[in-house]
Image (cartoon, rainbow, N blue to C red; front, side, top):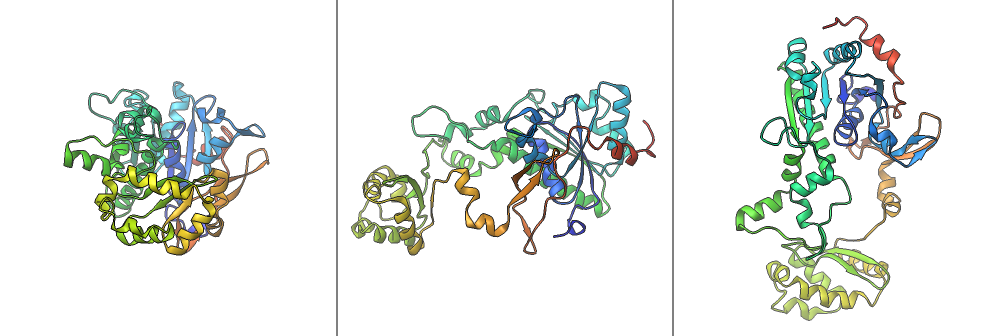
Length: 386
C-alpha cells in the first residue's frame, strides 16, 4: 500500500498525549495515513525516558510514536498556547489524554475549539471519563486493571492478584479512541459536524470483558481466576509436557474426541464426567490431572505435531523472541526495520492489518523532541491567532 492509498491521508491530528493510551491511538491514526503532530511538554513525553535506549533513544517511545512529527510547547506560556491553538484550529482531529478540565483551563478545550473549527473531531482519553463522580481522578493501566475487575480473574485460583502482562487498559482505550475518531471522520466527510469523543479507560476495559460481565449479570456470581483454564470449555488451557508448557484448545465435542485419540485414552470420551462440554468444564480439575500425567511423558514438540495433525488448535507458550520469529509473522512482514533519529537501526512491530492483501509500510520514523518545529510553524503561519 503506497502512502496516497492510505484511508486517512491528508488528515491532520494534533496529539497532546503522554505514555501509552493516547500515543497508541495517535500511532494507529498515523499508520492509516494521518499527519500526526505530537505536541510535547518541556522535556518531552515521559516515555522518552523509559528504557531500553538505543543510541540514546527510547525503544519504548519509538514503538508508540512512529509516523509522527514533534513540536515542544510549554502550554503555561501564552506564546506557546497561541501556537497550540493555531495548530488545533488547523487540525481535523485533536487527541488528548489529560485529566478532565486541564485543556479547558488552558483555553484549549472542546467548546472553544468547536467555535473556531466546527468540523473538528476532539477525542479525550482519560482514566474515568469526562463526567461522573470520579472524572477528576487520575489512573494508570494497573489501577484500571484493578478497578475494572481484570485482576480479579487473572492468575491462579487462590493466588495473589495478578495484572495482565500487557497493558490492556491503555491499549484498549487507544483502540477504542482510534475507532471512534475514524467513525467520526466518516461522519464529517459526509457533511456532518465535528464531535467531542469521551474515551474512559474504566469503560473500555469493562467493555472488552463482555463474557465476564454477562456471566455476572446472568448468574449473580463473580467470575473467578482460573489460571489458563476457561470457565465453560475443557480441555482448554496450558499443560506441562516433559520439557515445557503448551496449550490445547478443544472447544467442542469433535475436538475432544480427537484429543482422546491423540492421548490414546478413548475411554475418556465415554466417561460421564467428560461427555459434554458442560461436563468437562465442571470437572476440568480432574480432567487436567489425567491429561497432565500423560503429557509429561513426551516433549511439547511431539504433542504439538500430534495435535496439529489431528486438527486440534494448540501452541507452545512462546517467549516474545519465539513469537516474533514465527513464520506467520514473517509471511505478513509485521516486523519491520526502523531507523532511529541518530541513525541506529532497530526493529518494530508494524501495523498487523492487511488491506487488499497489503501491509502498510512505516511512513516516518519516530521524531526527536521538537524536531519538526520549523515545518509545523510554517504550516500554521497563515492561521489567525485567537
